[in-house]
Length: 365
Ligand code: CUA
Image (tube, rainbow, N blue to C red):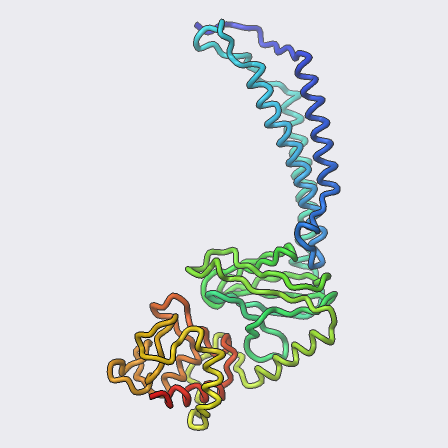
């Protein structure tokens, strides 16, 4: 039996008391967000970060008020209008339909909020995406699983941290050499997907010297979680230029091709095994042992690579001769190994370095 009731809701004193409590909590939440020290939770390292934080605080304030109202009244009504022992089984409560006043306001208020939030967001988006800022143009390329950077007048890719001078506008173009990665600097509040064949742009001005993390937020393979690097905001232009000129010299002989096209002829005969040995210790020994093929660290052991009857071919199937070893050093190698061997540019190897390494490997019998 469905009990018939008049569609009248009497709001008792308790309703107004609880409404007053929610109002006070809402005001407290708004005041909290107005003063929230977001920049002490996460530094604001670049120009639009502060405005993005303001937008975040505005949204958090609105969300807090909505949370208090929605969950507050949900709990209050659940408790106040719970079924009584005396109610018939299957009894339903008061049904309210077509309340024009309520419907009008719960349409108008969210519509206004959406328009305001859109306007504020577009203003910041315009700064990051559209507004030209004529600053330093830097490129970042995502690789499995590291970032490289390209600067004007520096050949090839820079493989250490991204260095930027403070208070200098930056236009950053990002893309990928393999799968989709992401470029996220939480301290800058900026994020862009790195998509092969597509260039995405971020415009900002670093404002706070320091070292900040660049994090990949797009699942890109087994080492995705390890894919983070650093951006260093340098406190003086002179210091930044010293770093920049260092890379100009270091990469003077590196190709600009991306990734380096293989097959370029390298004068292998001029290789110096002693120089190659020193280089091996810094560049290769993290992944390769000077031992037999099966002595794996990440990649195979390289002792006797040019003279191993059990392995007449290299991992890529090419015959084990100096030119084919040089080719792997140029192009990098992935195969079945857990981590890809980076290519020449990513490894920061000049053509001469490759000749030296090949000479050294050839000397290991
Ligand atoms: Cu690169 Cu995830």
